Length: 172
Image (tube, rainbow, N blue to C red):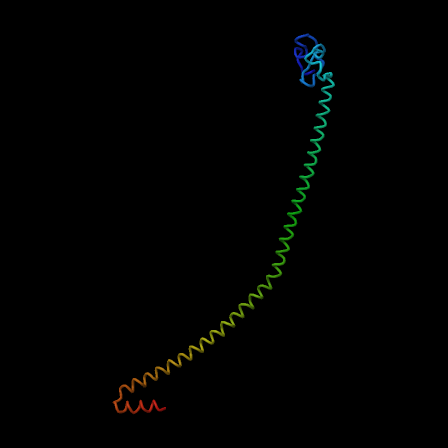
């Protein structure tokens, strides 16, 4: 009632002070209005008691809400701990992976050198075969040119000599 003006505290009809609270209509009533036909069947109580009931309800809601705030804070802290643990876990695994690759790196370099050496050896073998083949082809080319030169020389011979030489060539 302390927040109501003096005009609001007085009943307009009976000019009596409003001291009763009608729970159904949520109105402040004077004693005569509360006993009137319009409000007689409603639940009434003194304004102070209604305010205390509302304060109790409000306190219970506040307590419930505060519990939820606390629970949420605990969940948030747990989530932050989980986030920190997960970050630490990822950092740990990253370092483990790096360590393993550092261990493998010298082995991989050694393996790389072996692989390159093997490739070079195979390459040298193939090159040697190609060189041998080239030398044989050059020898064959030389022989073929010599034969060609002989045939050219024979072509310049008189017919009788040519016929004799060809017959000798085919016999051998």
